[in-house]
Length: 113
Image (cartoon, rainbow, N blue to C red; front, side, top):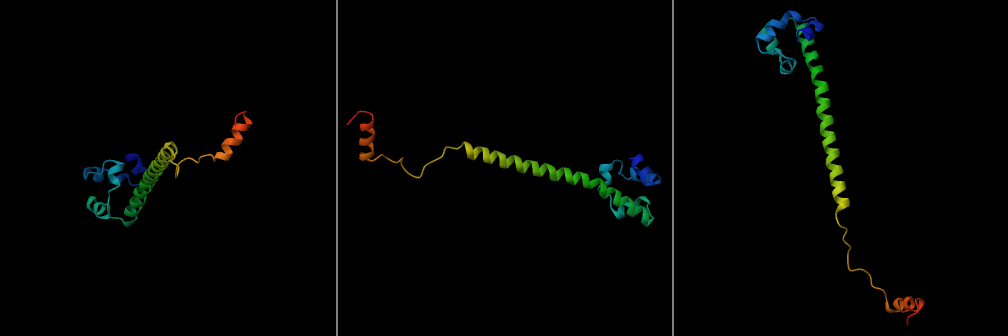
C-alpha cells in the first residue's frame, strides 16, 4: 500500500490510514470522506485524489464480476441447449400407417401378391 500511496503523492497519510484499519488496498475500497477527515486528510484535493484512485481500483474488480456472471449465464444456456437436444423427441400422434393399396403395390414389386 505504501507504494500505491507514494505513487499518488499521498505517502504522508500512510501511518494514519494504517492505524485506523485501512492497511490494505481492499480495505481502502470502503474508505469514506468522513474516514479521511477522521485520519487527518484535511486537504480537499488530497481527499478527491484518494477517492478517485480508490474508485479506479474498483473498476477492474467490477469488470471481473460482470465477466464471471456472463460466463455463468453462457454456461447455463449451453447446458440447457445440450439437455434439450438430448431429450427424446415425441411425435404428436401415432406413426402413419401405409394404406392397403400402397402395401399391395410394394408387395407386387417384390414378387408377392
